[in-house]
Length: 305
Ligand code: HEM
Image (tube, rainbow, N blue to C red; front, side):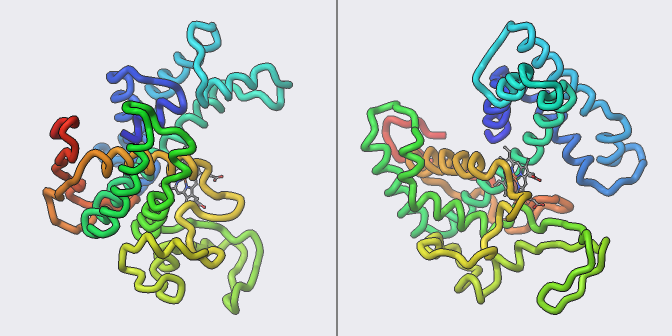
């Protein structure tokens, strides 16, 4: 779901076979990027980096799409088009094909698995916290009732999802999709009495911050209402902070809100696998089971899924 949404937003791709091919190759490249670099055939790293097939195929696909756009064979209002519109700018400001392709790949890799994992955790947390699920469903159903049948969600609806946004934030606080953010010290410095030398690698541990009971009362409890209150600066950092803050923060939040709207206003669900173990060797925390669920339609007009 998130992959198709990303490719739609970036390049307006809707053809299923093309989407699946790009998804397969992106997964191989992303696995290789984040795997231990051993040059042994069969390892993720070898497959992704040494053979270079996945990346090469991806770049060929992107290059073809760019060429079609440049020939004027297709034109759509999307992220790729906004990069191509820079063609009319002076030499130093336009993007060449390889920069455009790198931007596309970067956004897909940075945005897809992260958002998908966060959505999965929202399903799990809401399943375990029936009160929160009921409040969310009530909010989302009241939104649906105010709209003509079949009308799409708009920005105003998203802004009105006040409890929904708190669910999204609480999900991100508890799931810690990106566990830490690595940095390298450019100079010797002292932070709160700790000496850090130039060149040291420093990890900002988002999980420790999000589970600190001085910052969040009863931190192991899924409690969206805690976001009624303002958080202390730097205490809630699922999207990082400062100059490298996540570029796709708003897209991720909207994707999650739309997903939660569809899920809770249309269905209840049960978890098919109660195993709470995490996936092995994954760089993003996810349930090993994949969190399979059974959906039950709550409206007669909606089919069972
Ligand atoms: C729930 C979903 C997401 C989470 C939890 C998340 C989290 C983060 C975090 C923590 C960082 C900062 C890393 C650091 O400081 O080292 C980051 C950076 C980034 N994210 Fe996201 N992200 C999400 C979705 C997205 C989406 C949807 C996109 C693209 C559409 C995206 C694109 C990026 C990019 C390009 C950067 C690098 C920014 C820079 O270095 O200047 N992310 N993300």
